Image (cartoon, rainbow, N blue to C red; front, top):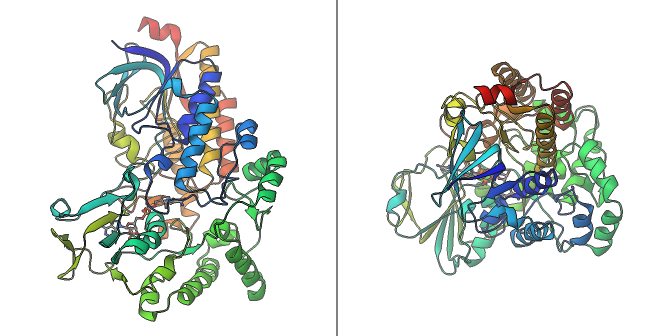
Length: 544
Ligand code: NAP
């Protein structure tokens, strides 16, 4: 029998947890389906060695509840995967959210039924469910990208993807391990795998920019101080910061203004050195023209390149590990002993930039005719970001169009929230949203608040459906495109612009116009009575 709810929420990661909390408070009946056996999303699946947040724990946490902020104590400056998982379990249980969640249940499809104006949701247990509203809290980096490398299926050893890591600890002791990829996941995993492996071979296509994380136990005095001042920290993070976090040297800092080229080299170096000593992603908050001007960008890029050369002893390895493209246009990585790991004799770096991996054999990875023997392989090859979680599901709108077809030429959305032809389907922290450059925690909280208000407005005004117009999608795509091309982001191949997935368009994937602008667009849309949408009347629907 089909069960019917007011809203179905897909995914119990950070956004799913908040969606259940918020929509329940609005009085909606709910069901949240989650493929994993518990909550946490990214922090549930990414159990690879070294998985750890790179925004300070005090800031990378739910802001919607001061009870949670006061009750939870972080043990490290940057929490690891296990602690983050415990935190999400704590929040879920604290608000008794589990009773609206169903685990070990993957949503395989969602079809809009134009007769009833319901979403018909099909789950992996063979059941079908109905709901008026469907919220896709499926995550921006949750659809693993398994590279299409010839022979992968023939490999006789174990193969792991960082984003689908087993629950049981993996023991690489005494093994020859190959790691493919040098993005954030690989950079975190490599130093720890190297501690166990007999031989570690890293296959690098593009070198990363990594800076020290400088993690350590949480200073108790700092935790107490932030808790006492949380309201003010959150206000600054949300409204007065560059990326949604503000801590540098344990103080909230103002965004830097002015050009990197307008100050003396000594002044610039002093700022960069301070960011270096602080650790983590503090480099995102430097002169704003590093995002838009190649010469300004190069001042920072050259500073970090110099640090890489200092950290790697072998000049040949250092040269391979030093990027030559603009910094911050691929995600900056915060590392713990990454470059130092290459100073170990049993760690080899294989450059596959000009000569790609030819194939995987039964016993290893072949590059330029030579097989690098491995007992286990780690695919740290990233995600079909922003869109993959949705395009891999069978989502069909009112005319039977799939979301994959709708997004075939680019991710068409209105404000990263709604799509034309998909009434009452809300997408969160995904295509067309500013989540990649602003704390995703704040983006999702604000998006879900917007959706809650939208649902209340629909109910109050006697409307049953909302969907974006094609014109609004065109306008948002154009706005995303304008903001993207005002930066250096399109000059570098990254998942931000879909370059890691063959044939994927960059259009509409990310919004780089900044959170204040995004907030303004969303507020105007709601205040103006949803001019970018078509609203369906309840009576009209009942008659049709
Ligand atoms: P990623 O940044 O996309 O890195 C994937 C790596 O795999 C890249 O080095 C890529 O090379 C390489 N690769 C892919 N296919 C390949 C092939 N066929 N042959 C050789 N190399 C190949 O993925 P990720 O490291 O999982 O990180 C994704 C995002 O997740 C990050 O940017 C970050 O936003 C987030 N993340 C955050 C944290 C954290 O907060 N601490 C940790 C992990 C991930 P190319 O660069 O040449 O494409």
